[in-house]
Length: 277
Figure 1 (cartoon, rainbow, N blue to C red):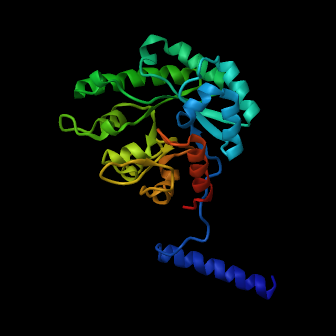
Figure 2 (spheres, rainbow, N blue to C red):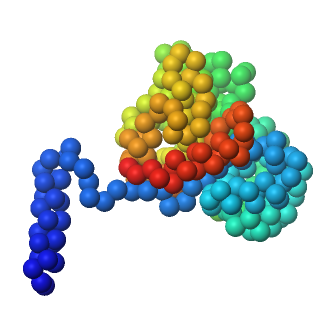
Figure 3 (cartoon, rainbow, N blue to C red):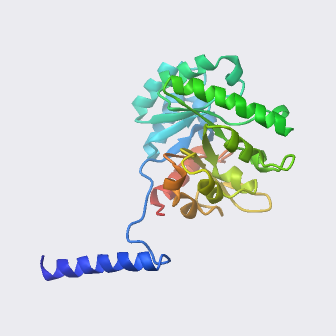
């Protein structure tokens, strides 16, 4: 080893020791997102007009994964072909709550044909979340759905809404769902923040339960206007730095009502592609 290499090795070793002793110091190596996804609800109107063209534009922005919220009348096999042409993968899709009871096996078959790994329920009907008993009925339905999904090689998950964090009969419904189910969770970072929850608390309490996240941003209180990712107040570096503890594998940017859907998708992608944590 020459003198310069020795000095560099000493510098790196010394920084590592200092980092262990003084954890507030900057780390030498920081994480970045390898594969960034888009929840296609962001571009739903564009998909309705031009399905294949929209997927192609999403891929051209740089996204490598997407999450569906409906197939716009297309068969699952055709959806998979469209994804392949656009160079995209779709590890997850949202399905309506009613699918749990109406024809869950057919829903699972469709998900497998489209190439998904997770089938995600994104909301709970109002009549089932008025009481704690209703939330517990939902938990039981989720467990049944998850067992059926696992039997086919798929996973079932729930995507939270803001109302999941409002205290109900002395309990937080989201806590009940986590405690009384064994399903995965897709944590929507906007809705948990605006609902008064703390992602880091849930990551610590339920490590590994959050394989997917929705990366959405808020302009801050009082109205929490939704904005492009990175232009608001949510501390994504602090949250995503805990990705290993949380078990996060997929990151889906989203904006529910963008003024310019492709502009929003591009802005959010550029922020996430630069992000270090």
